[in-house]
Image (cartoon, rainbow, N blue to C red; front, side, top):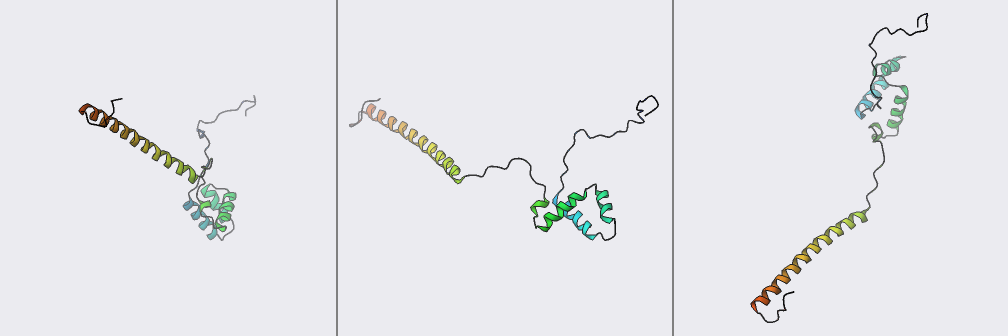
Length: 134
């Protein structure tokens, strides 16, 4: 600020991300960082590691706890959002039966058309037992 209370802009080198985005880390990266953190013995070495990687110590704590529980899946990024509804085996059976019903209905309709054509042909040829064409 200058004496008049105005802010002076020094340069136009301001770098701002267009939209903030949640960072995700692959499981292999998490394992590598945990291995490096476990290898740190000198005071301040873990802090230097975290600064170099741009991480917070809370992430290291969460990753260590997950590793301690043996949750390898916890080291992979978690899928966000709603969980898919479990598939009911009855729904699968209903869809299979509906497909079979549609198939059999089509076959029955084709058979009826064939029988009607045979009746018409028999009536035209004057065969006994043939009913009049409908």
